[in-house]
Image (cartoon, rainbow, N blue to C red):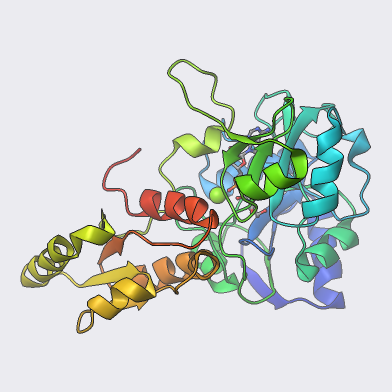
Length: 333
Ligand code: TXA
Ligand code: MG
């Protein structure tokens, strides 16, 4: 199958809607990362998402809808605080995990009795979702375990030949995936950190906690247990106070004929002058926005990536460092 990349306009949106209604897959931009979408009511289409990504069949998908789509037919709304959260953060990079009514394909939630729903704020995503007017199941549009895509070209590199259409809306500005929040309990629980932080949720809902993984617990968000966000070359991560060891590693890699590169914040980059380096900004928001693009660049320009822990200025850093540490992990986690 040939994969077309089309700028977003009336014609490409109509084409996208007809691909989706015909059971096909369409990659589309959001404010976080590109998604790989299918009609959530169509089990064949949802199944083909897992095949195109090589995604484990126990890792559930988020359903995306436009702001006026009535999700009352999809999920149960149980707690009063959820309305306040929606008023404050939806549309936006917040995914809410509700108890499901079982209306969409059972493949979406991989047999869980919950359903994750997100309303993207990106205007291109909103136009696409309005045009199809269906709940769209969509994971990030990368091959499973690879770095998430923030440009149409990143999607193309992983999905060429596997999907018919990529809607090109330019680079995603948010940069890391949405916060995934379980709202099936009295206290909302963060299953995956993102741009909507625990503090922000607490300020609206009155309380918020991080899901703790305890041995023997049923995994509430299966996606968090896999190796993720990984470049195709070897990687390593150093703390901010280990710059000397990181430089020694860089030099020894050069001697072994490798082509190393640092990915770090602007402050570490100052101290690493003279070495190849991709700086990703000063603030946590800048780090989030630049991280995946930097990792994509690093894997195309070098063959050994050395990450240096980022120093942030907000709780957003929790989500950024979670991705960065997984991307630069040496072993499968
Ligand atoms: O920003 C985002 O969330 C992007 C864009 C495309 O919207 N999507 C995304 O999807 O990151 P994906 O599939 O790469 O990650 C979905 C995460 C996984 O960690 C998955 O386990 C969790 O959401 N998830 C989905 N449905 C769930 C459910 N019913 N219960 C718990 N976790 C769920
Ligand atoms: Mg993903």
